[in-house]
Amino acid sequence: MKRLLLSTFILLIIISCSKNEELEGEPEIIDPRESYFAEAIIGSWSINTVKVDGQIFLYPHTDSCKKDFFQFYNEQGKEFDFEETIVLNCDNCAPCATSTTNLRWELSGAIIKFYFGEQYVTKYKLIDVTETEFTYQLEIDYDNDGDLDVLEISAEYYDPYGNFD
Image (tube, rainbow, N blue to C red):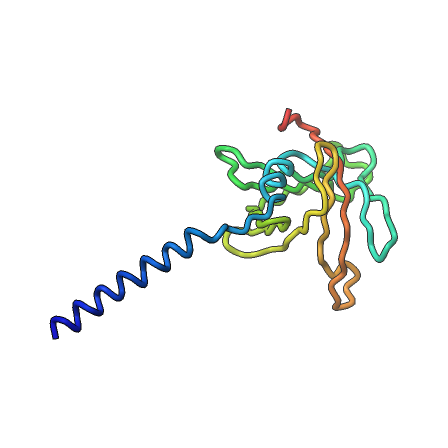
């Protein structure tokens, strides 16, 4: 009985050691764009155009107000914080009325997932990010026909309050 227990124990040690060696030897698959995107998206952006079904439309900002914009933060006190500010539709508002939404963001490869607390909200598929441009895809039923539509959003760097200077 002791031999059986000892043999089983030794066998378990050999198996666990060989599995650890296999795991250590296998390279971890990392999307090289992820580290670039994690740094490049930090900043303040304003939507310029929306591409739907091959057609490009200018984003309708409210005249005489700051543009609608969104900001990605990742610093102390604002870890993985996303803020989107839109101007409410008002023609003669002074000052311009705005609404801000705060979410938490998480990056995996070229996908940014957004959460309100623990609740998943939506995701962006990053197409390209440079110092001055931010392009992503968003799946949403924008025309309320029950089918998800793929929108390609192009934004430009826009920091109306100097938060990222």
